[in-house]
Length: 212
Image 1 (cartoon, helix red, strand yellow):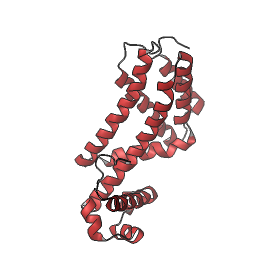
Image 2 (spheres, one colour):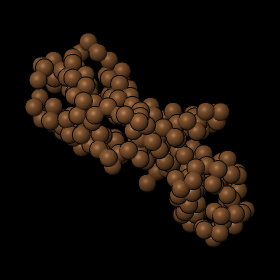
Image 3 (cartoon, helix red, strand yellow):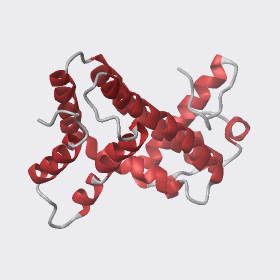
Image 4 (cartoon, one colour):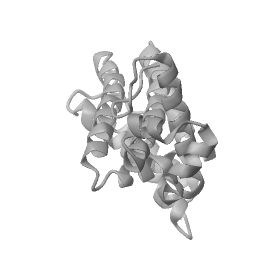
């Protein structure tokens, strides 16, 4: 599998395996205690690689964390892209497209997605003040937005989605309402899930040529 932009891509398979093991150990540390918990000596002890090898591939602690963050982000958006590819663009009728959209809404609102939303925002926040990391994330984000936009364009081509709205703008909106769930998770008196789902469905319904 091709590594995300911003992650070391060694030529030799052995070196590639080393990079993968180190990144996994770093992600594990970040998810357990944040970036502050990432210590080079701990990573070396857990993975068994030499300090020279780690610095050769990552340049140091900052480069290691950046590579781990890019990998995290890539996994989040890749999962979403896979769901979109396997559902929306394979529908053949308006009813199927609407049903697939509804299924994606339910998936994104599920409890299993809470961690993914928080982690994605954490990765984005960590890119501030890190121009190289931010550039790598931007490339991943652009690709993800285009994937969603392609699904919207498919709906427009089939005559189901309004043509007077920009597909990429819709793609950003869809990601926005998904990430906005973090605010519900944080609130001491969160909006009811049923109320939130209704608002989302009403908003998405406005994109369709035929309202349901």
